[in-house]
Structures are given as structure tokens and as C-alpha cells.
Length: 123
Length: 168
Image (tube, rainbow over all chains, first blue to last red; front, side, top):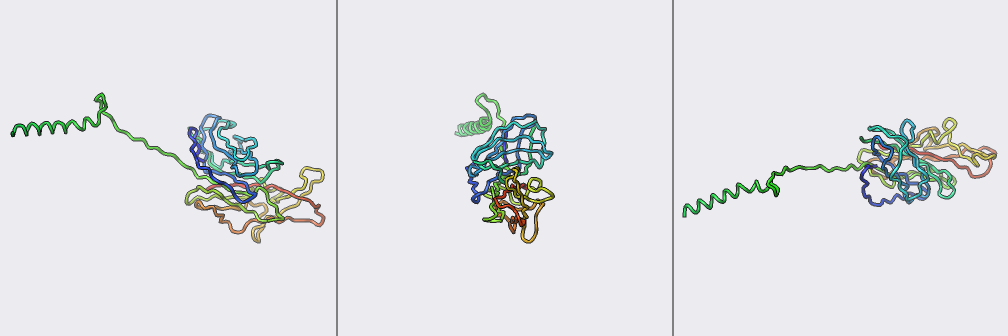
């Protein structure tokens, strides 16, 4: 994901509809954050075509959970987050963006996914 | 006549000499230094993978992973694996549960097969998308095969699978 702390580009609405009964999982090569601060700008979302809630978590390779969302409904975006601790500048490889999925009505856990990415923390 | 031509020529030369100065001076007569700014913006690779929200093995025992968006470059691969650390238990078995956590909890092991191979316990690759293609190039789909005992209680058994997606 190309996420800048200062600029979020206008993007065409992309249809993510997969086969019936499937859950669309967005993934990115990189995620950018600013060093030395806990307030960050991101672009996490649950595609509106999904029929489940997402709980989105960002976890470093050493297991440190930087962020975990509440139940995120289809079509909802998360643009401002507060991470658990400020990071030093550098590239944090094999950072995981975890999607735990839950049925809309019963909140039963559904199949989930993790997208592996590089977290680039800029000075 | 000769003098008039000479003076006109002199005036023309003087005017020409002034032109460059006028082009690079601002309204106060100060010279202007030109510059340039390179504007860049990086678009990072991204994708959207579709995993089955749930699988009813009675209807279709196959695990199908597709992609609806693959904004990656030539030479990049997006792979989808079973996340074994979260999916398997008890030395690599995948279980389906009935009334999990309840007093009458029951569970059955469920084999994962790919062709003739058993993939139990493996971080098995179930999706591969190369060079920006949304076509899954993994050959045979993974199949679920519940293992029933002679007195397995009837009912609906469910389990949750987890996937790990990586771009390389």
C-alpha cells in the first residue's frame, strides 16, 4: 500500500467481488509510517462486497501487536490509528496485517488471513 | 544616407544586446536564476485475494482461492499458503468441531489432500499469482476429506482455516 502521512490519493472504486461466499482480503507490498510517533495515517479497509466483519491487526515479526481494530464492517475504512508504541526509522520486514473474519449476524469466526508486508518507517 | 544607415544599424545592435538582459530580469531589474523540481510518487504493489468465507464439504470439498485485483509488476509473485501455526493442532491435524466448548463437544479429523498427497500439517501453497495475473497457477485444488469413525455423532462440524499471503 502506498500510504503517505500527508497525502491519500484519489483512487477509482475497485470492484473486489470474488466467487459467491468468498471474502476479499486486501494486501500490500509496503506500508509507510512516520518514526517517533504513535499517531499514524493508514488505509485499512473491509471491501464493501464482503459479507463479514474484519478485525484488522498489525503485528511485527517479533510478535509485537502495534494495532488491533474493532469489528470493521464491509465498506468501512480505517485511516487514522494509534499504534502501541512509536517506532524507530527503518524497514520492518515480515510485518503481518492480520484479518480475522466474523459472520455479520452470528459473529461466528470465519476463515481468516494474514498478509505479509514490509513496514517502512520514515524519519 | 550612409551615416543614417550606420546609425540605424548601431541602434539595432544595441537593442539586440539588451534583449537577453530583459529576458532574465524581473521587474526590479534583478537577475532571475532558473530551477527545477522533480516530482515523484510511488505506487506500491497491492492485491485483493478471495478466500472462501466458509466451505461446505458436502457441497464442494475443494478449496478455491482466486484474485480479483493484482496490481503487481512483472516478476512479482503473490502466494497464498495455509497458515499451519493457526490452522492445525495436535501435531499437524485439522479438526472439525461440533458444539466446541460445550459439554457434548465432538470433533473429527479432516485430511487435506492435493491429488494423491496428504497435506496435513504443511504450510501448503493454495494460490500463486505471477506477473500481475489474476489466474491461480497452482494446479490441483486442495480437498477436504473428513475422517469418520463408526460411531461419530451426527451433526454439523465446523473448523476454521487461516491463510498467509505474501508478495515476493
